[in-house]
Length: 177
Image (cartoon, rainbow, N blue to C red; front, side, top):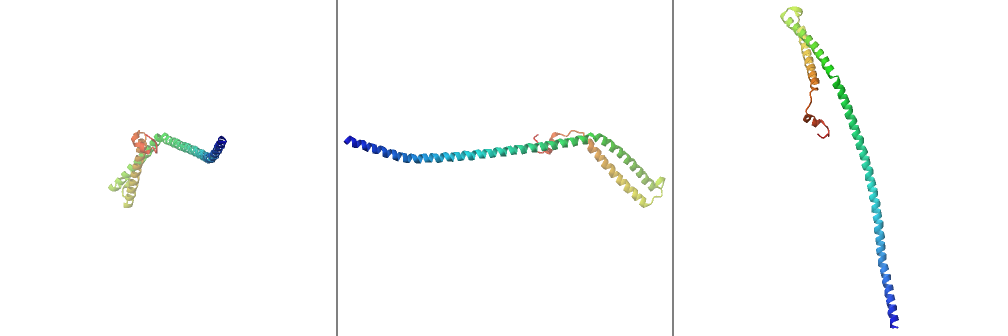
């Protein structure tokens, strides 16, 4: 009988251990389930964040490509316009040279008329002070016109000279040398 009592006590102890163990195991199982649910939520949030970032990255990439294409198109247009200007440069220099020569001829004639007005001989003899003032004003206007034409011709001829890259580097907006 003693063995029977010991067996019953052992069974009761085992049952109590199993009950207590299952109770504490239940907490662990619930904690594990809760941690698993939090992990799944975190993974879902991570996946959503990654998808959002990838979408944003794709949008920025498309925006960059569009901006780059826009800049390349503007650059190509500017190069075409510059080439068109340079194409007519030599003809324009020749035309300006002829106009300058004509203006210088007019200027020489006006200077001669003013000189004749001062000496009292030739076509300007007997010129009034108003006529002399008008001649001087015309001479000043033509001299300015000749100087402007000469400056323009020099500028156009200057465009034929190669410019060192060190001088152009600051003008390349954002470009790397």
